[in-house]
Length: 159
Image 1: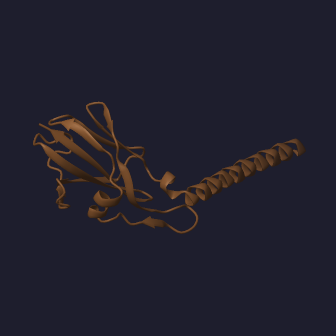
Image 2: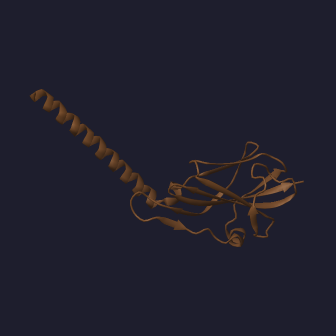
Image 3: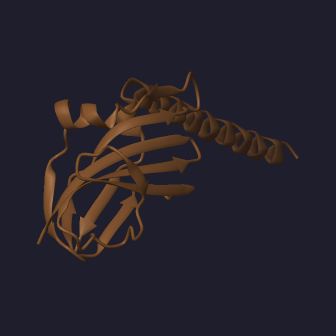
């Protein structure tokens, strides 16, 4: 009977040690994520016929396991064009456009504004580049279990 108690104690101590280690690891990761929240949010990947496009993170609301949520409000689109424009990708009309995230979103809304009008509407066909020549700015809003992100990217369709 004494041997059974000894083994049982070791098992309980082992389980407690593993649980404590997991909690400490989660706490450290959360601490690091809160110090640089832009690195904690899901990353976007935008490609057009295998060419990687540059998309920039402009806003997010992200909750952490411990501590306060962090919010960065996306700027007005006209400010993006004037101050902090993402690189423009030059594409041909009709190319396949693929938008993915490093985590699976609960929802994703893709809006497109033509030229520099700053007026967005849902992209009619988010899986292909428009055929009409011109500049387009895309706004991608996605929601995840722990928050939301807003990315922008700009394309120029050449005729």
